[in-house]
Image 1 (cartoon, protein in one colour):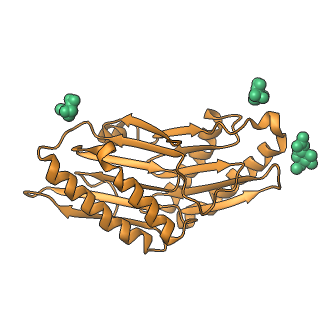
Image 2 (cartoon, protein in one colour):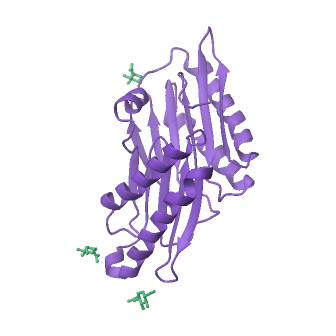
Image 3 (tube, protein in one colour):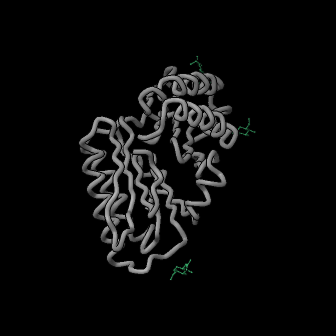
Length: 239
Ligand SMILES: *[C@@H]1O[C@H](CO)[C@@H](O)[C@H](O)[C@H]1NC(C)=O
Ligand SMILES: *[C@@H]1O[C@H](CO)[C@@H](O)[C@H](O)[C@H]1NC(C)=O
Ligand SMILES: *[C@@H]1O[C@H](CO)[C@@H](O)[C@H](O)[C@H]1NC(C)=O
């Protein structure tokens, strides 16, 4: 197992209300230290960060590379599919500044927020599923009927995965009836550098990890560098 999966216990509800603007998590890649490597990498990273904060907000996704080998910096920014242009901009600007404080000399890093993802590397990664960076989060509350709930969760997320990889925005959100009057809400999303086939593979893989992540839990997320899902028993995305 080469992937560095990070497990986070969280009350998703608390995170949303009390710490809405804080990052969920970040990972500094251990691939190298750029001040020892070449200062011009840092200059390229600064330009790239500014570029992504302008390029990403209008469509919710930005991708770019600045400089030339061996100092080329590659990066992307992705906002959740329902996030407005101004909120996307706020998130990407915050992410770009925060990740540099948390990983000041790393050539590669990734940071996740509720509203966006920001990632950069000295290695070209576009179009490849990121199996290195992954975060599990789940709600501490257990559901009363885990078997049927798990099946519903898988069904909803699989349906949303099919919608996401067939959609140019590579994003889908939806809901499903549970027992009684309760509902299950979910979303799936891929970074748009992936092909439809790779998006499907990325989402199928993380949905397959539901039993390790979120067995019987009333809410959960697997958030990776290339795709993510989230489900909750309360609405959390704008229609
Ligand atoms: C990484 O950069 C920092 C700051 O310049 C420096 O103190 C540290 O020694 C560097 N690490 C390596 C392995 O070169
Ligand atoms: C640092 O980057 C500059 C610009 O790309 C290049 O001219 C120079 O040779 C590099 N130096 C090292 C030590 O890699
Ligand atoms: C949920 O179930 C786990 C495993 O059975 C248990 O350890 C945990 O305390 C439960 N959580 C709550 C909030 O009841």
